[in-house]
Image (cartoon, rainbow, N blue to C red; front, top):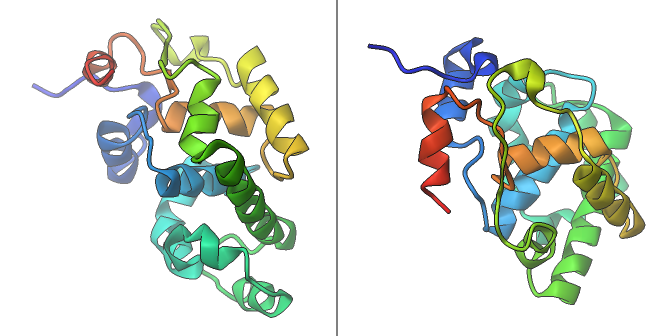
Length: 191
């Protein structure tokens, strides 16, 4: 018998695998949090499927999302990245990766870890929604708006309220698996 999944994950095997193993799992590793922040920003105007297909290329292009290396990227590096057909070649998005790495380090200096900063918004406890269908899941919330505004003040780019809500879902700050999805209860057991 096949497992019931969130409707959005049925697109292809890559999406199913991502849904089954990663989406909504609470993340506390700063490197993973940075990767998702960057990938969600890269998604702006595109599908998540497109980003997942290019994920390994992004990892190679961005030194495995090593923000300490990324802060030192030069304009020459941006030009090289703009030639990389395996990633999203948008100058503003690529430049935002550098500014976001700098802002990320600044948050780490202030809060010890980015994890401390981002999870503090939910008192270190995930929000568990009870949506029974995809159309009940919001694209943003008051909280994603608050986080987005705060990140913008701290120098982040490509982190609007919808991008931040998608980030919150991806890293488990919000459990938005539909209640009939097999992952809904599994994710709740992780808290």
